[in-house]
Image (cartoon, rainbow, N blue to C red; front, side):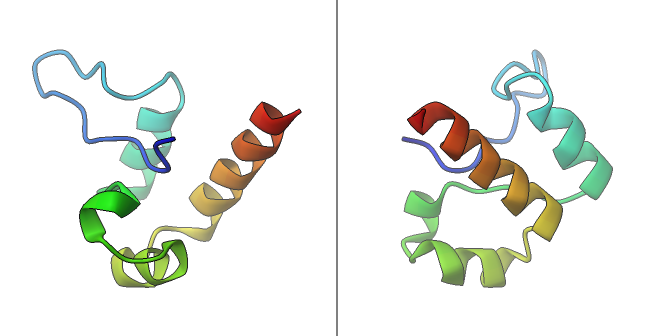
Amino acid sequence: MREYPKRPNPKTGKNFKRGDWNIAKNKRFLFYEVGKIGRDKKHALEKWAIPRIYYKYLKNTEKRQSV
């Protein structure tokens, strides 16, 4: 399962689910998939300084999916 959204295609902007792109735009961060970084999640979060708010958002979506 993909942990972080891919950067959107500049022409369509369709790679993000609704809401994800707004968060990314507001925070002005680039998000990468952990697999591309080739590190564990914690290190990836430190390396790319993904904002805590976005990390919480990811955790909440994971919880929602598991139910």
